[in-house]
Image (cartoon, rainbow, N blue to C red; front, side, top):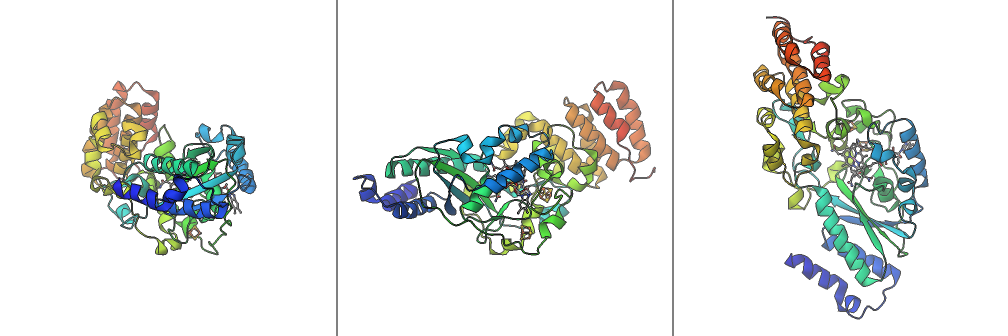
Length: 402
Ligand code: B12
Ligand code: SF4
Ligand code: SF4
């Protein structure tokens, strides 16, 4: 991009890149922050690799409580997450970066439209992992050119505790909903990290500004916070709709409402969002087709259509079957009996995960008589034990016989 290259030239200047005259650490840090902004980051800060000892202790408590559920990758090698030097012994400074993805519209408004699916804000545009990784690599290359050093870049998927590191680097604080809150951008920051062998001047850690507020704790539809600052991921709709591979446990199905990929409730109610700005990156902005997609259309997606609709989107990661499972839970919660046809059609789907969710959706939309008649027919043909269990365990309690 021409504009971007111009930014690099201006900011590095011929003195820095051509003659490689050494900048003082403080000037290098200022130039790095300018360069980060020119590359599209909205905030940057620096922490030492020894900055998150307390977070590491909380992390162990989280694992001991089993709050990570089936995310075995989170529990693997806790020593690497607990301390950046456990991941890379040579790291001397951690550069933390944030990209604002503030939404244009109130993300809670869609929750009232029960025949439409709510996709969380972070997943309505292109996948942030790809975008941020490219930017991190560009910034890391700039740093190496400015001052000989080694670098490694991370966004989300590596064994890095990005939120406590971002707090230590002064980007914000971990709110009671456990995400990083920024005075400038509210709850809407993606995080990324550059580890480097350079000793850079540290920023001051940010401090907690939650005060007596409990808005995020109280709004959570599934009571996923056992206490402020602590999340039980097994109850979180984000985990249940994205990470969880099997059937969604019955106790959470109603509370999920029409959320078909992730959840934004605790983020959206944070009063610090009043200072938030709409994200400036067009690739992360909501695609029209993903703002409020109709559940009946989503229910008809086959594998190819699913991949086409979610090209470059993070949603693609969970695959068509898990996605349709989520859509069927939303259909069950729609209170719109006309959507029962879609669920009934999916009783014949090849995936037992989909068939099981279709059974539950029908239990919510059909009368007891209708449901019992369907069950009698389907149970004869259904060989999968998990789907048979759904037929036996899903009872149309809410709707009387006609
Ligand atoms: C695993 C994971 C999840 C899991 C678990 C979330 C969690 N809170 O742990 C699930 C699937 C549920 C999830 C959901 C979401 N995630 Co997520 N997730 C991650 C991941 C990969 C690791 C997080 C982690 O280490 N968890 C383990 C726990 C123990 O760590 P922690 O959350 O920091 O917990 C701290 C507090 O509990 C605190 N604590 C505990 N007890 C106490 C007591 C006191 C008194 C105090 C003060 C503190 C305290 O200390 C702990 C350690 O710091 C990070 C990326 C990364 N590599 O860091 C993204 C990440 C956290 N996710 C992110 C996002 C955007 C989301 C969602 C908003 C997506 C969505 N819309 O659906 C939701 C938000 C749900 C929520 N309220 O947290 C962003 C958050 C950005 C930000 N501004 O903070 C990250 C950083 C990805 C990124 N690179 O941008 N996520
Ligand atoms: S993302 Fe939703 S379900 Fe998860 S903790 Fe926040 S409000 Fe609760
Ligand atoms: S909603 Fe309130 S308690 Fe939750 S993170 Fe924001 S300020 Fe803190």
